[in-house]
Length: 337
Ligand code: ACO
View: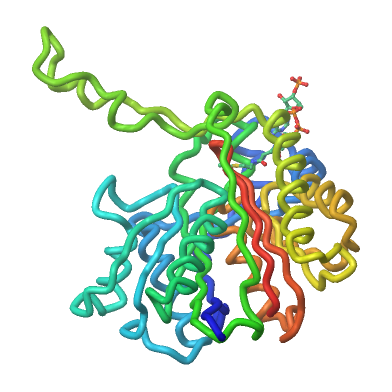
């Protein structure tokens, strides 16, 4: 008997117009163009304009993906946004995107997924479950970030790394055995908060109406992204390598069967180390970190769209997506394109 599987039928992306190159950064913090390029592989990143929100980038990427799939936003049974940089603490950015797409009257569910740079992998896993269970025929999944807003622009060890953008995919139910998503594999280890974390959440704000907390003190600075880059680097290589291997092993496949690896775009040296560990030819690895920097949850769908629109990923290709983020969180997905 046939049961449903999920297939990506359209991809899209959106990058803010403003390019921030290494030379400009070298005028702001104590660094050099050469240091940034040689240690990270990043040449430039994009920065969202004032008032340009995660939901704006997400909506533009979504429109492209819908157009590529040849379906309307009103046909989506579920809208998911993977993001660390939501427009608001509430409501979910996915509900804002639903409204901006003009389909709120359809009442399709919409919610956010938070797994930092692994957010797209987590979102893909959620989308897959809704489709395979038969609950949804079509899911819109977007990874979108304005990560530049979380950064301390005086901290040279983090401000050189990140950028803004959005990537989107439309997933549709197809019969099992056809081309599509073979499996997703997601993990977390919450003991690494101190190695990589963003600003504090609202729970760290002063308790109201206690003692002598003046109203002005309630508006405490919640901080910025903090990272022990070198330790994060080692964990990223280890966990992304492991999950890539287990995704392939789950289907009795090896790196030789892979046409493309689309990894999280954090640092070219991490990407090269993973390619070596997995055993895939570097020519078969999609790299956009040079042009995008680390766009967190947007990085994998942006790279995927780049490779699809560039004609590199072709029908029938075996593609491995591989992500890693704060938490730590990590995950892989294997697809027959
Ligand atoms: N320019 C010049 N020097 C710098 C800069 C800079 N921009 N940044 C750091 N340095 C210095 C450091 O101060 C240090 O100096 P010291 O030796 O005098 O103390 C030296 O360079 C080496 O620093 P390291 O941290 O060891 O440099 P490394 O080669 O590890 O590169 C980097 C740093 C680029 C951050 C790297 O560790 C990295 O990419 N880490 C992983 C980031 C990542 O994968 N993030 C993914 C998850 S992100 C998320 O989930 C939100």
